[in-house]
Length: 220
Image 1 (tube, rainbow, N blue to C red):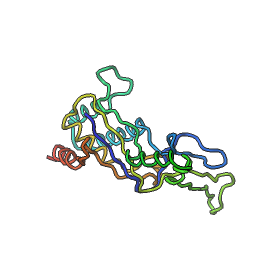
Image 2: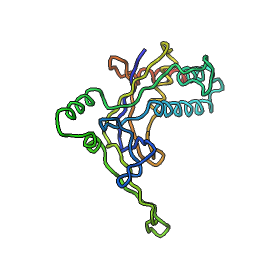
Image 3: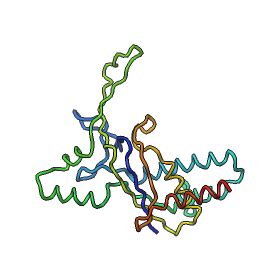
Image 4: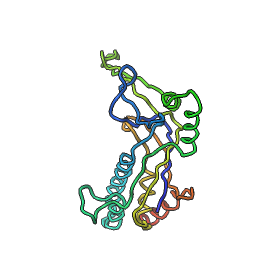
């Protein structure tokens, strides 16, 4: 079974790749050979799993029996370092620009004098910041430059299920997707705000449907 997770940046974000470009930026965004930014699937899956853990923790405050949702959590995200019976049913692909947009950009790059660096520049900007001391004076040597992906940029990640997921699995996944608020470097400092939705392979938004089931089962 296949589904899709669609994300849209509400604020600028950096999908960091762990290094910079000397003389240009201290933190570069992850991007492909055409200069198009993307987020690794394992990173996105980790963020969804983190939201799932937060949801289970919250449910545990007023629901003594969490076994049902713990099973769904294990089915979706697996258990780190587990044996075969604990392997995740859900596999998350890289979050990339929509296929039609990537195809159009690739065609432009192939038929013109534009280079991948031009595509990266068109989709991103460079933000600079510096640390301040108690008196409001910038700390010497603290100026940093970070490339950010511009707000409004859409991303799509393919979701593959090894086996057909149950209603509880999809319900918890929809709750994780809905709870996903921020992504990327600096998300704990207000960057990378997103809206997210769960879609079928046919393009139907089923976030509300599965979330309604989750709410009905959690708050009967």
